[in-house]
Image 1 (cartoon, helix red, strand yellow):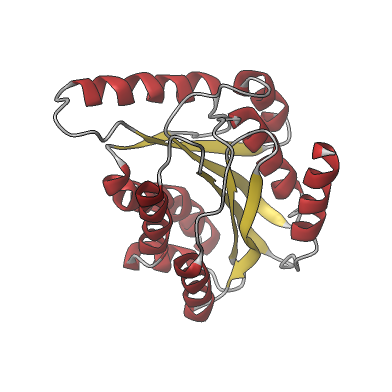
Image 2: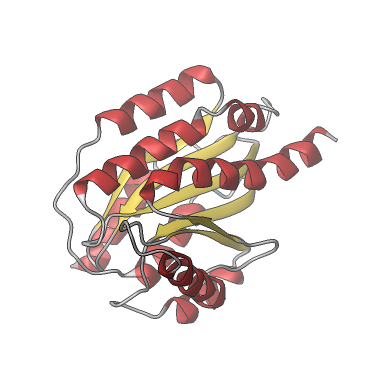
Length: 237
C-alpha cells in the first residue's frame, strides 16, 4: 500500500509540465516529524518564503530566463507520511515566486507521524527529481533536526542516488532550547557530522546549519544562494 501511495504521488508530480530547457531541478524536503512543533513548522515554511524572496536569491533564480530553475517542495516524517506542498514549477518570473509564497503562507500543519524516516525521504526526493529529465542539474535539499530512526538507513540509500547524478545537500537545525549554552553548538556539530557522513552526496555537496528554527530563514537563504549562483554564472558564460 505504501509503495502504491508513493507511486501515485510521484505520478501526480511528474504530470506537471517539464520545461524544455531547465537549468536546475531543485527539490526542498522539509522535516515535519514529531520533534517539530507547530511554532517550528511555521518558522520553517515562513523561512522558505523569506529565502525565496531574498533579492540575491531572486536574482539567481531569474538570471537565465531561457533556462529557468524548476522548484518543488514536499514534507516528510515517518515512512508512510510525505506530502507535496508545491509540485514541479518552473520559476519564470516574480509572479511564480509570489504564487509559491502565497501557497506556503496559507499552508496549515497537517497531522504527521512522529518518526524520522530520512532514508525514505531521500529515496522519494530522488524519484521526484528523475521526473525532470530535461534539467541540467538535479539537487535535493533535506532539512532535518534529528537522525533517522525508521526505514532504510540514509547511507544505504545515498549510494544509489549518487549514481543517478543527483546531489543531496542538508540543512541541519540545531537544538533551540534556551539556557543550554555551549551544548547547543555541540548538538548541532554532532548532527552536522551525521548528515555529512550519512546523507549528503554528489559534487560540491554541503551541509548548512541553523541554530534553532529562528535561524532557518537565514540558513535557507545562504544555502539557496550557494546552490544557485555558480550554475547561473556558468549558464550566462
